[in-house]
Length: 111
Image (cartoon, rainbow, N blue to C red; front, side, top):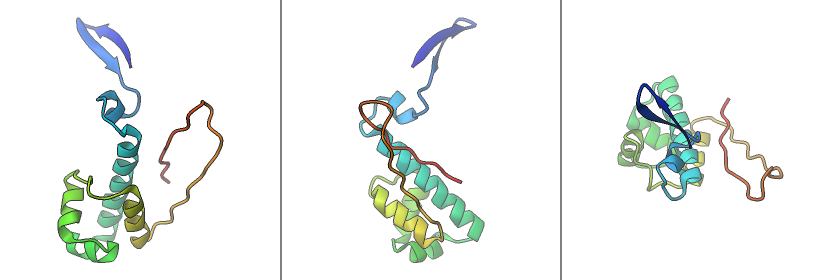
């Protein structure tokens, strides 16, 4: 993070991953899961699905959908979230390419 001062306040420029900026373990995975949940929310809204209807289509319980909508998706893997999206009519493409750095990164690109 880059730090500077504006009007006497210390301002930190984020890395683009709030989870990493907060020092959380598995920050990249949390960012991916958050992006997937955002897409699930968009899909539910665009299709006018209730939590119960979405749960049925996604193959999970309504309480898990409720947890997801409140930002608690720790009980769902990235794979399960991708499965939920495909059941809501989304295609998911996983692209693998050589990293620019010694260690690669996970990213989520949405249309």
